[in-house]
Image (tube, rainbow, N blue to C red; front, top):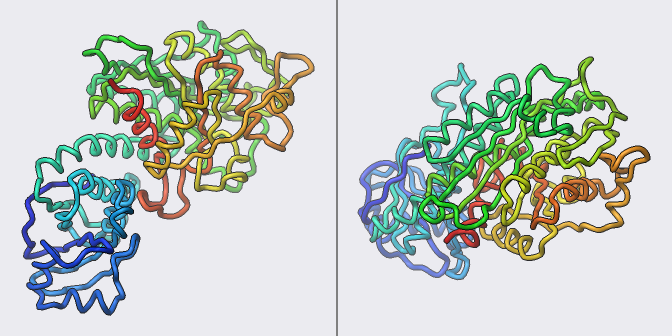
Length: 491
């Protein structure tokens, strides 16, 4: 992870320098000092580049003088545009441009401490790289940036603002690591093992295996898992951060779909693109990263995270289309399509969660449907909820963090399409509105609890670089849900 430090403003004599410049600002502080040290070269270069400080604008100067190897100017726009999210993206933009430098300095001396910290946070998020399996990469092909010093008149205050952001970044990186792992490494048992180090942060971890799941009546989840040689697990993570570690209120609950590889089972997927199904556990990965973030920043809340971990494989023992399974709720499901398996896993975990913990609310995350990608693309996750207040809170947290969600409908007309001829329900309907009918299926297992479902199929993996993340696993939801907790569920 990128090493961040804070110091009082002083013009560096070597390395790269980043200037964060607003549209309404004139040269002052470090910017003025750099201008004087380079004999006005910076101002002339910015003029030639037509750099005006507009939001999202940047300009790069190589060897501008004064011992600097590179100077990067990043536009912050008007003061009204200088939000935490925009500063995070400015810092991330700088980090992407600094990849060839080993160390750099970022001048945030004209910003409030929290915004200076946000710029450092964005740089950290953008610097992530998963290179565990690269063995022949040439040194010149590797990013070099490992240290970033942020200059601010109140470095201690900026660091204090950055500390909880760093905790969140640790959670984001944990999620990205999990989602990036290949499925031959990260099976259900291995993913459960990777949750156990969270105990060092004060999180209670319980891992339930096939024997315990059978005892709990998890017929839907076990049906998905029965075709694989890798046995299922459910991991329960509890963080007691409210009331000095003594539970005073009902917890907020987060539930993640953890299909560590999804072939579709007997209803097998096409071969093209099936390698992407290693990240069908991204919902579970997000829950793990979120719980890590809450514990690392010692969130003053009680939270529980539950993840259902299975592998969906075709074999002689696999679940067949037409099978009927009995869920932990006692309701029966006719399995029409074995590739609609995530909702079966969540059905049992959601029921267990509300029965065991009686939470204030439940939020599940799942790469559940391709239909949500057709509807919303890769820009926003689908939000379904039975509670208007919870939905509004999630929408605001999404806008604040840039992890956007769009509310989709729930209605009885969609629910009726899940009727089965031989069981309480079937696991799929016809194609129209299939992301909605998937959510309607899940709603049958929340037992009236305030609940939200986030379909992150279009946002969990990036096919190209994004402002705050490189191509690959995005960890969508960690920052969104951490902000939700910060704003609404802490003492």
